[in-house]
Image (cartoon, rainbow over all chains, first blue to last red; front, side):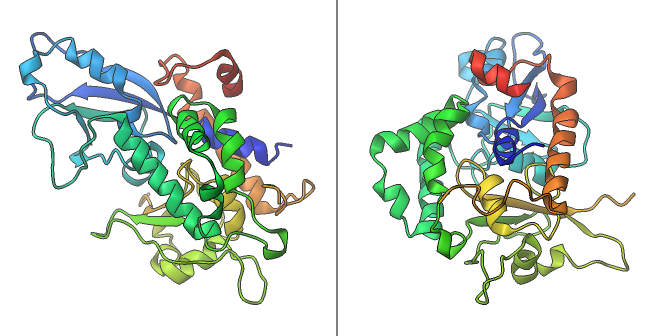
Length: 275
Length: 52
């Protein structure tokens, strides 16, 4: 029987097979072949696509190249969302490999943040971890760490080193036994059919009468539409890391095991396939 | 104080079994057929073992 460490490992080593194709209007000196890659679900697009960039730059002139950005079926992909979240949100129930279009022109300023170096990703990642720890432990754990410990979290993610990352991240997952969980659960709920980027509220893992809150309790409180059925048929899927946990799954366990490396539980609520 | 204190090893709640099964199905769907693809991040020997 697999134990909880295996869950952490499965989450960390999740991969998305991806086919990158250059946008048809990009100017090239010769035909650009598609490029195939296994992307880590828990990483960020602009952190793991150096090979993609190099591949397409071989057929382009330097003057035709501006900042790289990615698009899926007309939607510019936010590099500051974890890759797995982008897939769950935009490409669940579609066939693999995931087909991404690569652009080097007309950067969509209104949709995407600029990302000209990995230090931008590092700053974003560390600020998410700090925000999560503010919710979980009033920032006490992250503030007690040294700068080299923060670096270890980042380097673990950047170099895909599970042990390096978790040797430090486990400290961010601790809590006083008598409290039964974190102060608040760091979560974000994303809805494709909403203009709002995501729902994030204060929610405790344990109810005032001492019961463990579940995923269903969270959704009922902050996003009831996600679990309301319409004439017995399911209208929405609730997806985390490409799977649909049962609504009775304890939220504290989910936070400890299915959070992304940024320490947030990223939950996608997407329309259920009609067939 | 430990990460796993919230759950005992003997506990085989339906929610937990379902997560393990779905993760295994996810691996079949998203990785097994595409093992010939190049990894985005270069892997050390240890990590390659971890993938199996």
